[in-house]
Length: 414
Image (cartoon, rainbow, N blue to C red; front, side, top):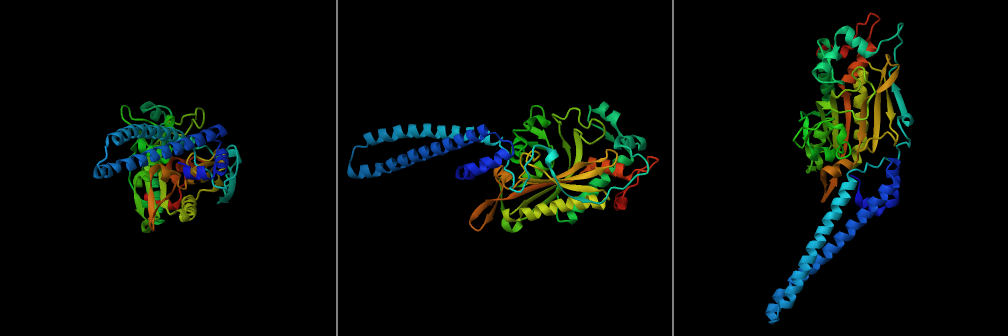
């Protein structure tokens, strides 16, 4: 959630930042109007409340002086009714503002490049050089079927389209990658956490998936519960409504979960293979830091994800997202894109985002610094998306006969 105090203090600066995230001027003006309405309603209510308290104190004085209290009582009763009405007006103004602000995205960092779409993202660097093949490399779904690693037809039979079944060595590779990634991240200081994959509405509101992205979530029928789209949700909510001791920061977490997404709006995209599934496996990094340390932790998370890919001998590149491609809650994001020779292109395999205090304000996650309670900065990112890592290993490790050579680092897990 954006900082309302900052909006009131620097409306022009905040509105310029929001417009970089495609928030319309009409929405920004409505935000300003509702913010000022709440400010006025709150001031009026507090003034009436103060008047009520002042008059109530006069009862004792009147009794000591032998004065008639009937007139005073009538005034107190009338003001009490007015104060109750003003409190309700304040509540309605607050509710109206909250409804609007929950759909307002985070403001981008100043160094995030402007742009309209992923075409305007900026490449930072490439890591490892893609190898040359003396044959035409196949795409992963051909290799998966040829080796008996993934059964696409039975996934559809069991569930529906965009589901698949990992089988035999494919299932073993999937499990090996999960264990490898969890161990790798733990060795980098990210404590392993196992969390629920069904969460309540408040948890999704705290991280920013609700109310804006409800259409992309799987909801439990007759329950106000949802399947998680990413482990970012339960991991970030670990400290919701809490004050963390400053000496415990940063808190670095690392968790594996299955993830569930309807992929609303993605019809026709990546219909073959396992690039875009309704259910997929992912190992997630989440961090809670002091405000002044979040850039340092951000760099650490990016490096950790990159080093996993390097250890797996997978060529990849780092890309900074422009404003037009930046996620709802992110102030800054770096994508890691892995090279897929079968597709002859780089594809996203991880997004590392710093949300600054945006999620912490929604989730009320603070830390005590001296006598002050400050909002933490929260960060999240994949390390890594397991299915897409399998895709990259198949395509980069393929041999001319269709067999697949895997990196030595996975030997102990297989």
